[in-house]
Image (tube, rainbow over all chains, first blue to last red):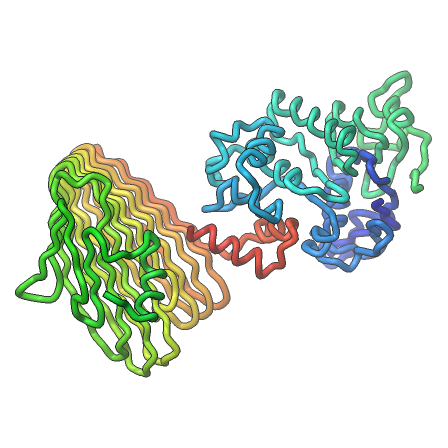
Length: 252
Length: 307
């Protein structure tokens, strides 16, 4: 279980302290799929980076299976069991996709496993395995390779930061199926940052972050009506005003 | 012939395809030809007027390798060698060269290899060259290769050159003259560390219509080392060329990249690009998200970059 308590992140801008994420708390149970959504610039990706240790928290605590990982750096958190797919994956000149997958898995993967990983993100392994992870790949291709690197290893918690960004409709549909499979069949713990209705609808619980704070958190049944205007007026994604959910933080 | 441990170790470093005393080969050791062999299609003859060999590769050669490594283990030696390769029309050959110095003394050890390739019509040549230095001595290891390439009509030449480590100073010069329809691929990989210095000057003259060149240089500079790259593509005919210089700079190193393009024909299309930068933070973070330490991630990035 991932437990986040009172997480806060601040930056200095023109000599002034600006709070980007304030006092966020939530949990993700084992085998649960939590989707974090909300308006652009609300702090969703910052939360993901704080969880992976890419950014340092100013305040708050993060626990993984009861162990305090707040003071751990990125590699220590990875070794503790957190997998992380970056929103904008970097390029690696000279590194093949095959090698990147092997590095992600922490071992030499047989060819059929590499092929399966790429197929699961809609890529034809024959065309891609020995290609370099460089600028010759499109943004969408790099993104799909990025997701495959997280799938290459079993994690306690997998974090995907906007996995749909830059991906074409066909691959996106395949990706949604893959997340469904990971969630339902493999019972893996997933935390996805997403704006996509298809992904949001798959969630066990939804956390809405706005202006750096939790705006609402609850089951899909509780959150979806307000989020997609199903039977009530939705104000949540308009960037102004309150949540419109009438649902509290949901810190379990 | 039985080779000593130092020689065997150096050969492993500079000859990735594996040096064996079989087929066509010539091992130069401490300034002398130690052993050599010919094959049916490749003949190696010692020069009579100066140090070095002439290598004759017949047009019947298909996919064969010739190995001509140089090993120096004597500190203080200054070895200059001239090797000429005559590759006949239609030949298809891999030439594996390279030089390794084991310097356990306090004197400067130096090898200047001057190689000339005369490549016949439609011949295909892959030339692999690795430079490497080792030894517990304080004397500098110096390698100054000169490579001259003359490409006949339709010839294809791949120059794959790498300086692995341990070379204190190198000043390399490469000159290429290209005939009609010939193609050149250059991959230059270089790593310097400590107080080492490396200079690479290259001029590729595309003289024949339809000739093309792809020149890629990748380097990593660590410590207080210094690197200068100056590839120049000269278009004298209807031709195409692309020069790409990428460098990773670390610590207090200096890297100077000067890709030059010189069109002397209205149908010459030549492009250059150069980039120098430190290891990208996002790359480090990505690999660290696999569980690697920062040092491990850095080593993987450099290894991939120079692979």
